Length: 119
Image (cartoon, rainbow, N blue to C red; front, side):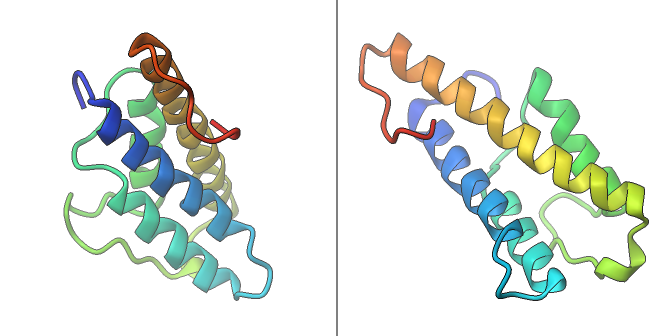
């Protein structure tokens, strides 16, 4: 994701925020939470990110078995080991944090105000 536009960064952050929130909805089953989080994650990136975000992005793909890019990201929760589940959740949070930081920095560099208090 070289030289991301501010619009692209906001798009990614919005989807990553939804992915993180999807993991926390206790009224859904663990499988539903995982499905929604992975769907939001997949929609959030048009291309693989660069820099520190790339490692977290790759870690998510590795945890779910490295599906081909652009395919539906679906994995049965019971097929993931505890380590893979932890890696997936930790990486989703870390990737959201990294992309939100990039977005804040880009907004400041553009001379604008930061949208949303949580970025």
